[in-house]
Length: 320
Ligand SMILES: [Zn+2]
Ligand SMILES: [Zn+2]
Image 1 (tube, rainbow, N blue to C red):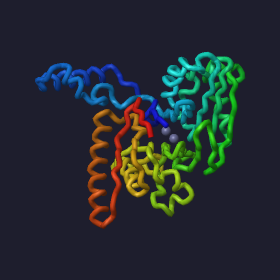
Image 2: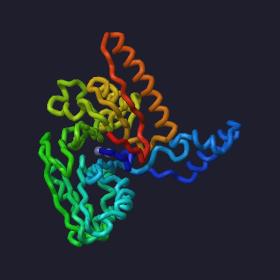
Image 3: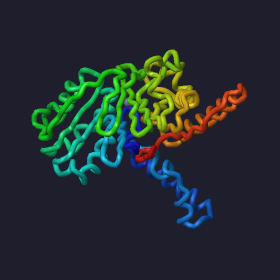
Image 4: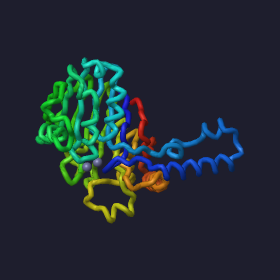
């Protein structure tokens, strides 16, 4: 299965403003001038964040196989996803979309009224959540004066599917299990499995339950995941001021990854106030933490598995 990130920002979309782009372009030109390289060689080595930042859209993730597609959360990244899906059956009114919600904070629902396939007659849009207020929330998103098209006027066929906490369900060719995360309003992560591979979606969470005992029935969300998406909105110093805000730091995800033998981790839900430089510096702080933690564990005689991890950039995808 292939996992793709359509939004990696937390709390509210964060478009770059022209003055920020202007100063970044200045920095790139300065670096080019100092490099003495040919343009082609310099461009080939430029990092994506230096060119375009980490991305400004809020949470939306797709998990797909050759035949099937599941969407997790309808943040502002859903708008772009909807546009790309128009070239398939959803563009002809012959498609189905399956959208799972973790919870209903604005940054996870704000893209739904701009998901074009929902306005095409013939399409079937399926919504899934553990929270019993699922239907009420989706109806509210399409209510005047917040949005000019009322839910009752939507031309596609809409279906709601309640999920059971920690109950595994087959969905298209995947198996989906919701596990509870640690957030101020109830929030459910998802473990999605197919053909022996597992994706663990762990956003939004403060992960206050860190030990295996504390995680209890929610531990299987993480164990042996091939890819884990984890909340790293804050750094260690910010966590002190923002206790109980419902978000974590990369160190917590790295500790879980080392203990639960997670192979690959992407950190998301970048703070809307975080500049690209700040996200890059949080990543280098996490790198120092990770290296010292591995050394410490090895010194205690514990063997560690390699973890391939990074702070995520919008548009990233991986096949697991
Ligand atoms: Zn969020
Ligand atoms: Zn939230």
